[in-house]
Length: 364
Ligand code: GDP
Image (cartoon, rainbow, N blue to C red; front, side):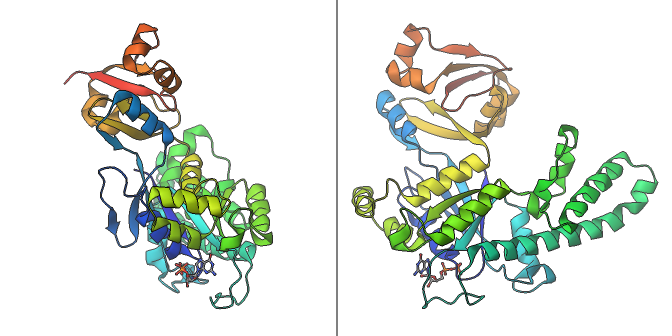
């Protein structure tokens, strides 16, 4: 599955947010019991109303949402790249995630100590990014040294790696994260293999106070501006509110949201924003037993999408009976779609579309 790492300075609300994410009713949805893999790793259901609609039409006994993993990565402080705080362990945790949810303190509260003694989310973002850039520089320098002999020996891969590392190094030394480097398609794989921290996409999470959850404040405005300039995205959330909501059942939660002037839980927005950041999409399998959502990257071919369910589905792929979500709903299910000629037989070259209802046929 796909993993988002929650990072940020101490005392900005990371744990509060993580607890809310993993305790909420949605996280525990369907037949998945509460699923904390490790104390700091949680599997969260991706909210999707379409799945409920499909299940209602098909009379599915079970609803199984698709899931995303969140990792609470504590321990990032100024100097982490030099081994302060949890240092290297922390950086190793970040290497493993697909994207970063960077929590920024945008709430004023004299009772909660800020490590720098002031609330300034833009500077905080810079502090963390600087640590990540320093860590990248250090790992590049080490690897450049190790690769010299291979490069001299004419090893093609090593030459490519060296070229890419030099490009990353130049960006980092000019104060830019490695994600600003333009990478050609033929270098994409090798680039990803470098596993640089500052190539991970970032979603800024502005943690505001309860009263400001609906509209944000001057701090979150500043973050929004910064994010736009960087080409990153942001969401506004009150971790406190989310924590309270996570204790409520669905009906109570809706009432509470209404009272706060919020249309939906911030966590739902956060999960969806993460989904978009990672360029993910959902397709469905629907039957009387279960309605289930599956996650793929945008642009995934039908056999590879089938492979998410089981490797055998991909290896033995014959074709996929496919109904677009809207057709399935408008025509009241598979039978109706079939009669209206809206069930398509798609082959190996088909690119799965968001919302497709799929039935895979395969050889065993
Ligand atoms: P972490 O160190 O980033 O994991 O931060 P925590 O989640 O432990 O939060 C640090 C402190 O800030 C705790 O006492 C939280 O209750 C408090 N806190 C978190 N979010 C908010 C908020 O939106 N408003 C206020 N006033 N306090 C918050």
